[in-house]
Length: 145
View 1 (cartoon, rainbow, N blue to C red):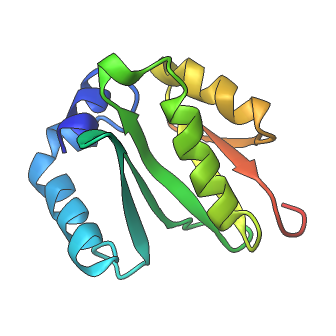
View 2 (cartoon, rainbow, N blue to C red):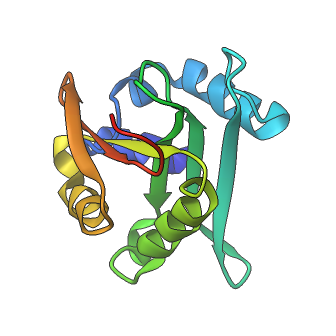
View 3 (tube, rainbow, N blue to C red):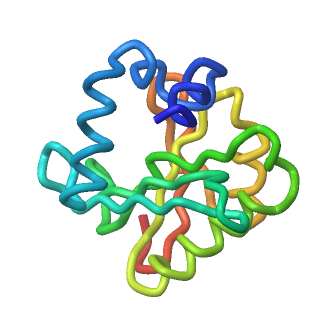
């Protein structure tokens, strides 16, 4: 939760994460406890560790409103002291290796997430749209958009 709040405060995630904390906390609790979001969509949380210390997390959920079956990286975040060391790339690679063989992977990038945006482009994602202030990217494993 603290990674999501910090990222939202710095413009990396939807600002509602920090303005609607209890709703976001309920979303995360549901994802962790039941592996679904509050709408019942399959949602997976992965925590990244370095030795015994938690250093980051990802949340992946069903991509809603997309033209094909897929998942959306709803959150990928690292503690500040672990950025720039390849951990984020490793976390993204784990997600892509798991999901891309069978479905498309989507992500939203807010303006402050330029490094993540560039990392996605280097890994074969393409910009497919915009939603508010965020750019929507897609890596397609199946069929055309």
